[in-house]
Length: 184
Ligand code: S3P
Image (tube, rainbow, N blue to C red; front, side, top):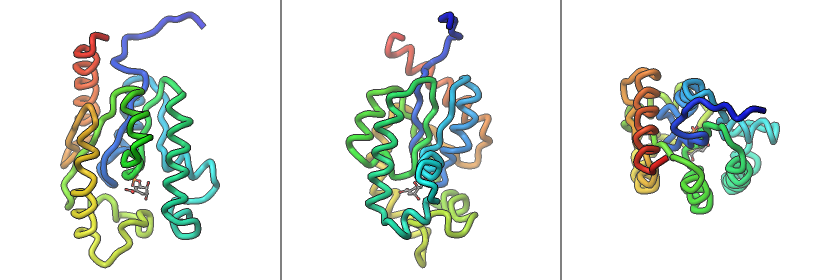
């Protein structure tokens, strides 16, 4: 194919952040805006295994799920023209983190624990880690533990009370600035 390419700030973008910050919805729209493919890592694992995430946790355990995530990341960093939305815990793995940070810009999405609670518990049973008596407390503790890792991302954007288009616009702008700073 002729190498005719529209100018783009990046051809591989990773989205990370806590459950319920909007990684999937925003990732899909960001991919559309940049004319890239979109993969949601949770859906990718579900399609590969034929098992839903809650069932993987229930029947195979969290450790098995983490291995699947790691393997999927290892495979997907070899692709291009891709926006990849991770699961909330994927970026905690040092090997995946290093591979993704080295592959292209990593964008962390942020929201308050209250917003996360509202968004992440809409569909009962979908988020195995929040199946506890006090999910808000669980969100606060987990978020506090994970925040230092999310902070390693190159770009940070808040999704609290904002429309998807607005967030996507900010990400695209920041991706350009990031690319320019790197002399691309
Ligand atoms: C998890 C987040 C989920 C999913 C799994 C574990 C986590 O993805 O991968 O339930 O450890 O935070 P989302 O962030 O898309 O909800």
